[in-house]
Structures are given as C-alpha cells and as structure tokens.
Amino acid sequence: MLSNEQIRLVKSTTPLLESAGTVITEHFYQRMFHHNPELQHIFNMSNQKSGRQAFALFSAIAAYAKHLDNLENLLPMVERIAHKHTSMNIQPEHYDIVGHHLIATLRELAPDQFTAEIEAAWVAAYQILAGVFIDKEAGLYHQRDNTQGGWTGGRQFKLVEKRIESELVKSLIFEPVDGRPVIGYQPGQYIG
Image (cartoon, rainbow, N blue to C red; front, top):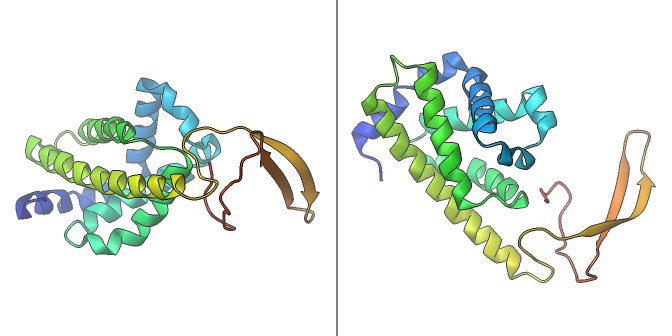
C-alpha cells in the first residue's frame, strides 16, 4: 500500500504528464522496442504507427496518477486492459520490463521534475498497479484454462471459410488444427 506522501508525490506529476501528453508514451515505446525488440510481436504495429497505442497507454497512466487515491474508479479500465493482455498472453515478467522503461522514460524526459523522491513514489505506485494486473490476469488465465476449450499459449488454427458480409466486412472462420473444442468467444471480445 502506498503512503499518503507517495500518493501526493505521484499525483503531483499529473500536470507534467498532461502537458507532455503522448510524447511520454511515444518515447517509452521507442525506448522499449530498442532495448527489448522481442516484445514487438506483442503489440499491433499499426496502432503504434497511428499513435493509438501511445494514446491508450498515456490515458491509462494519466488516469492512474489522477485516481491513485481512489483505485475503484479504475476497475472498468483494469478489467478491459486485463482481458486484452490475456488475449495476447502477457506474462508477469513483461511488467518488470515495462516498469523499467516507463520509469526511465519519465527520468529522461523530465530530469528536473522527476526527483529521486518522485521516482521512488512512481516505482512503488507502478509495482502496485503491476500487481493488480498480474493478479487479475492470473485469475483470467485460470478461468480460461479451466473452461471447456480453453488453453494457454499458442495453438494452431486453420482458415476454413471466408465470408463476404458486406462491402466493408469480411468474416474469416478458423478451426483448431488439433480438432479440440474452443471457448465460445463473444462478439467484440479480445482473442489472441
């Protein structure tokens, strides 16, 4: 649990985050992909190029800093992000990498404002947030693994049908190569 002082310090960076905007997250992704190129396959590169991913991460970071003293406000966001993460098989060790590059980015972009005291508060806050996601995702993985048709990791599928739904929409129907059942996914649900 964060102390009142740590919460105050993290919240004090909200104006800095808001004024920098997606510059922070754009730098973060460039830095992380440079040092950890093995993570590029996890991210949709079209969303990287369009700026959607940088905006999404910035929005989540800014919301976390702003609502650090009332995390219940963030539960819908955590739920949505955790489902997306499990669709991409995000693992606990990924949070250490992301945390390292996030803190380094803040230090590099705002060296005067990002004091050692503020950095320590952000490290503690990030560790709590990472723990929330890791726990939530562990529950989702467990639920998925124990549902008929569930599995962890990769699984081979083959394309069995292409349907033209409209001028703009095409449906691709896949079946598992191993012939085992799959979970009954819902429309709009993230799947990996």
